[in-house]
Amino acid sequence: MDFQVVVMAGGYSKNLAPLVSEAHFLHLLVFVSQSFRFRFPSSLTRTRLSLAMQEMPKPLLPVANRPVLSYVLELLEASNLKDLIVVVEGEDVALRVGGWISGAYVDRLHVEVAAVPEEVGTAGALRAVAHHLTAKDILVVSGDLVSDVPPGAVAATHRRLDAAVTALLCITPVSGSSESVSSVGKDKGRKLPRANIVGLDHTRQYLLHVAAGAEVGKDIKIQKSILQANGQMEIRADLMDAHMYAFQRTILQEVLDQKEMFHSIKHDVFPYLVRTQLRSEILDKGAPKNGLNGADYTLNGSDLASENLTNRTHKCCAYIANKSKYCSRLNSVQAFCDINRDVVGEAGHLSGYSFSAQNNIVHPSAELGSKTTVGPQCMLDEGSKLGDKCSVKRSVIGRHCRIGSNVKIFNSVVMNHVTIEDGCFIQGSVICNNAQLQERVVLKDCQVGAGYVLTVGSEYKSEPLSKK
Image 1 (cartoon, rainbow, N blue to C red):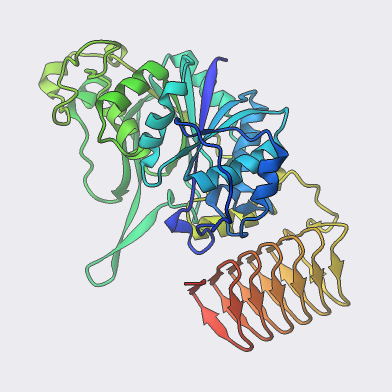
Image 2: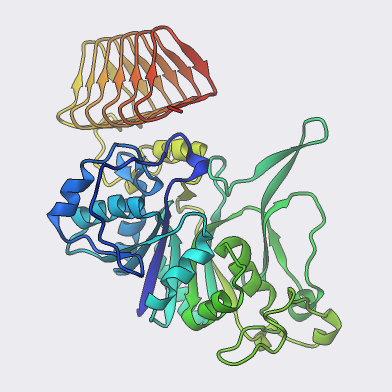
């Protein structure tokens, strides 16, 4: 299909604290080239990686006890998109992610891991790897996407419509993802909902307007020229930008080169292409006709009264996923919890595991005490042990956890090597690697960071708990 794929995998996201935190490495020999490209063919690198503390960068956060990045990689592999550049923030993250990929996907994918500085944004990350992009079209996808929408369908739509950019849009999850309809406090607690506002033509193939995080119920400003050229527009507030974009490479590079202040694909590059599609500021070569290096371009509707959309200089298109498809991004703590529950629940086909007759996943090496129950839509992984009279409902428990007697775990995620002593009650919480809960701890809607210890009888509600 002649697509190159860039996976934006991130690093240590502040939105996910304390689930992710910056790992502190012992002395490592780092093989870094001037272009920040990494290859990980040697077992030596993997051995050195084992010296790192088990703190978690975002790409390796577990979803049903698999790194979240694995869901995108296998989705791409299923569409025969195997030439990938995985972009991460920071050299230490590149080492960890690259070491994992080299072991998990050897002989399956051609992956190069590129480290970029933190806080450069997705547009800056693309600039950093642009000199490695040579294909006619580029597929850019977020590494935190968990979905069963085939990327090949997005790529095929892009080619069929000869688009400059084609975006995957999915029905917005009810809660969780920061792409969901959210609320912002205002005027004595009054909350104004926000959503992604999308304008489509009557065929629902062409994008006419995009506004991320717009206030629902407020007036929407639409370019007059768009309405004059199209005649009508369907406005949608129920669609999530899944952060999967197919770009024509020459147009993408033109924008990145000439709009150096652009920081984000979603908030800068993509809206810019949509709003300039009737009278393009983007040329294959030469100086811009309409002041690309000047102020933001504004179309004069009266100049385009007779123009038809078929005459636009570049096309911005959408692939809208079927309502039956699953699509969510792990970009908030709530989304982490929701996706984990979904992938061992109604979206269990994404997990890659076989479910038991009880509709759960219990590893053969896991041990359950007397009168202990693990309910439907739960997962208990390798080597974990539960004492007597425990109850686990709609929860994911990782590897080699030690859980005492009379413990209740509801709607929660427990990562690897966690110790939970007798009589604890855990609800709606996340407990990270190597944490320890002493006897009779009560947690409700909390996040416990890696290695944190909660003392006997302590109770917490709606708190992040981590080492300072």
